[in-house]
Length: 312
Length: 293
Ligand SMILES: Nc1nc2c(ncn2[C@@H]2O[C@H](COP(=O)(O)OP(=O)(O)OP(=O)(O)O)[C@@H](O)[C@H]2O)c(=O)[nH]1
Ligand SMILES: Nc1nc2c(ncn2[C@@H]2O[C@H](COP(=O)(O)OP(=O)(O)OP(=O)(O)O)[C@@H](O)[C@H]2O)c(=O)[nH]1
Ligand SMILES: [Mg+2]
Ligand SMILES: [Mg+2]
Image (cartoon, rainbow over all chains, first blue to last red; front, side, top):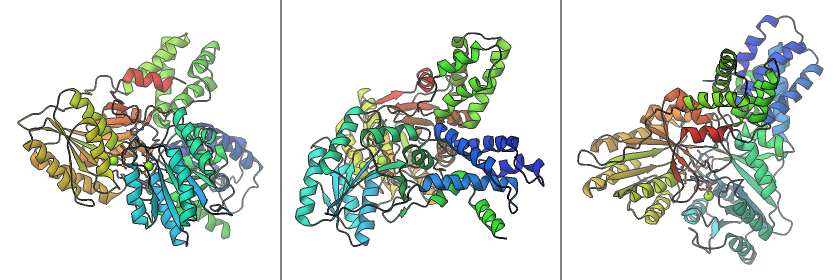
């Protein structure tokens, strides 16, 4: 489908073999190829520009490698920079000193929040926690039923005092869930919220109201890995509207390159914490920056080659 | 997505110089890239535009803007037939199959489309062939109740092809005008699930040909949208695209590449979560929104 970045870089560097040194012209030519590769991976344009500038900077100062040819050397710099941004400060879920710990999920429509709620619940339960799922999406048709089914599959309780489908106040439900959790000794509360658009001021305010009602320890922004250039606009809107502490990338079992991971990490400084990679509740993992970097570049095998080249 | 610079300013800068400046053209490119049009279609478009500007000796920013608009409209194909085949024919209902990856808005689109058809005085029946996702059939049934049409559903975890078959059968027996079949979301790289979808269509076709296969694409989708369209078209012969969530900030520029490569027209757009938020696709309006800041 797409030419890999490595193929393109190899072509760029064909004339350079044996030269072993990166000139400004080489770096510019390479930068153009990397730009295309990142754009085809759906990295947002402003992020691509900033990223390329940073890579050029590093490439200029780079020592000429003995082990790597120029193409490999640039790819390595690109990869290292990607991992650096994606990695951010890798951190685990923060638990409250006084339980319950509150985790609130927010994101666009259809991103995978409700499914993630089930995955988180199962994951937490397996670690010995007593999670409670909270049905605070009272808008989408049968979102409450969906969460109940998901909760049942995960073997956890669901707090769903309102039927939904337009009936009930999500802020009140969220608030009520804390009392319920304290009374019944649940130590983690996961609040599922309705999908909303960044430009929907009313619903963004509602999300902020839910946040204020439950004072979450973690607000997780749930993002579909297939998203394109809109990722930065949406991430910024959620950051401004409700704020978030971490990102969860969903539908990574697809074949999208997932450049959004880079866009959002670079723009917001929040790291991707979890990866959702399937429709089943077990399809869930902590996030691995190195895997994501290879995926965005579309060249996992090449990086292995570089590692081997460096070792020998 | 909003671009850093406005197209208007880009074009002004471009034309205020004697020499056509690379940076100015890059700004035009940026507008298209920021709308998810994709690298190759963008580069081709800008290349053609540059040639035309040179040949025509165009001076005014408005003229260049009009040329770009013209090129884009030509790409999204104003002459394609965007009508939906939803009329009863040969003594049986029209059958519409709705497909796509997870969470794009299939079930919602079925509900909205049912509303449109009911308003045209048609007898509509829904088939809940998503037997997989939690409460998917409930969600469709809620939509059915909302717009006043019945829903045929099967057991949870049951065979989607047989639910689809039963739904069409019920539609034939009830002498309905249209049967709308909702299917489970599936990623196009899952061979097993794509085979299952192919089977749903083949089994339904025992009643006669399917009239429309609508692929639902989410406007926020990036370059993967083209891959989705390719694979779904291969498996179930897509006859139309529904571009959803255009009420957000995403421009849905990926459909430019989809139309260019597959020639499958965008027929409908989704503009919200309500029952009335479905509209016919209008190339001019779509392109204007694409070029707006
Ligand atoms: N393949 C795959 N599908 C997923 C994943 N996560 C969620 N889904 C599917 O994506 C669709 C939407 O998921 P939901 O959990 O309902 O998304 P949501 O964000 O709660 O949606 P709204 O509440 O409508 O905003 C469903 O079909 C899920 O099964 C994933 O990691 N991989
Ligand atoms: N803003 C907006 N939201 C939409 C639109 N269409 C659907 N949605 C929302 O997107 C989410 C997913 O819609 P569904 O209809 O459940 O999507 P689906 O494709 O059936 O999802 P799966 O069956 O899980 O694959 C829901 O929250 C819908 O309300 C639209 O045009 N605009
Ligand atoms: Mg949900
Ligand atoms: Mg559905």
